[in-house]
Image 1 (cartoon, rainbow, N blue to C red):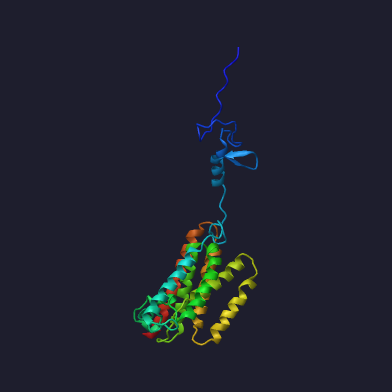
Image 2: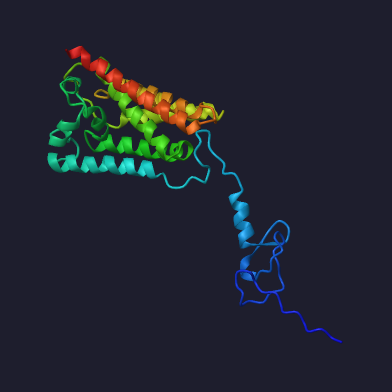
Length: 283
């Protein structure tokens, strides 16, 4: 006596599709649209997804995810903000080579005496001002080149923290040593902080520091030789950026994010305290 033929198996994801294939991992029947080639046989999309979730994501020396370079969002935002402020000062000053006549420039530029009188915002806002076209062009090119290298390594929020601490470090150095009426503006202090950050990252990754030392040397020489450039802001920014990056890449892996947050917050507080001490000279 013959037995009736068994009903053909159907895909577990598409019950309307008969199939003679099955996943080599879970054994469930699957159609060709639901199978993916694996090292051994073919696996269904559910098993492929489960396997991908079980793979541990790699991280950089700073704890950022190693998911490819991606787009340097923070760097782009910083460049855009600097350009936006520069355009505003150009429109106010009605000139592009010298915007020091802009009301916005005069309200945001750093002068230690004005900060001591209560204009504390100048410690931060001066880093988004530029004297003219050449000044902003040089700084933004450097910011873009360094940012697209460092941001993927440090991660977005760590990179932003390093940048802002570097900016404040440059401002703090000016507050400590410059006279009351010395005007300072520009992203150079923050950019030098990224140079210091790059050096620390290379050391941490045991890569040759010759990749960045010539650039640092050339910029230091320019800061000394060319008149009107704030060497103190550059040095203060470089030291602050290096310290912030060291706090990021040398902390233990256990509770790394919390430690990094605390150390960056402490460094930010420290450079602000230095600025306050600098302001105390004028009382």
